[in-house]
Length: 153
Image 1 (cartoon, one colour):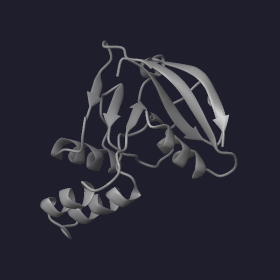
Image 2 (cartoon, helix red, strand yellow):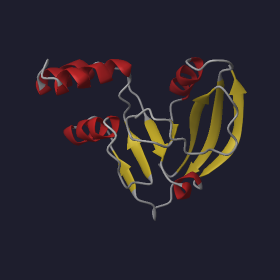
Image 3 (cartoon, one colour):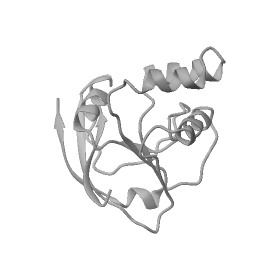
Image 4 (cartoon, helix red, strand yellow):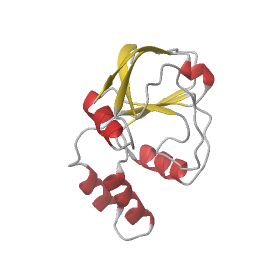
């Protein structure tokens, strides 16, 4: 991702993104979550209480930052998501890759509990629609974003 427009679904306009630590562990740990899929950002915004706002940013990748990219769901991605969801911290400025939405997370939990095999997990998730998320985990990472505006849904 060199120069790209990315989106953040929220219930407010977010001209200056911040890293919020809210006690709820997410796929790639704490940070400011965005996506390059506008439809997905709209879904995120519509799940919020109150207003539904899609914020738009120009993202310019900084090669000097510590960036982890998962182009697709892999064994490494699965372990990273499991670790982050369990509260294990990482040292990346930015993490980018597929999203383990609620349905996929249910499959992750089933796999971790031994209720389904790894092969069954991969069969279940391969039929999901494409997802994307990019999380900005440090203040230096947030400097790669330039607010372009927002739309109320």
